[in-house]
Image (cartoon, rainbow, N blue to C red; front, side):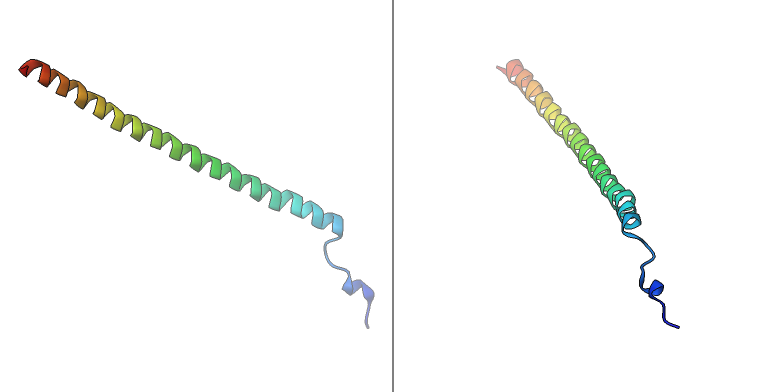
Length: 72
């Protein structure tokens, strides 16, 4: 026997809206959170690596200046 109740979807519109709000929005904010984590870790290591290179450059310049000063 045919009934129109079988045509009604499992989710009503409010339940669908709640599902979208809780799940998709939470996945979106989680992805933003992990993107922020990756970006800040990349920035942190980039700055550390840059500082390492700059400190080596400054040390090299300092010893080179001492070398020139010693032999002049």
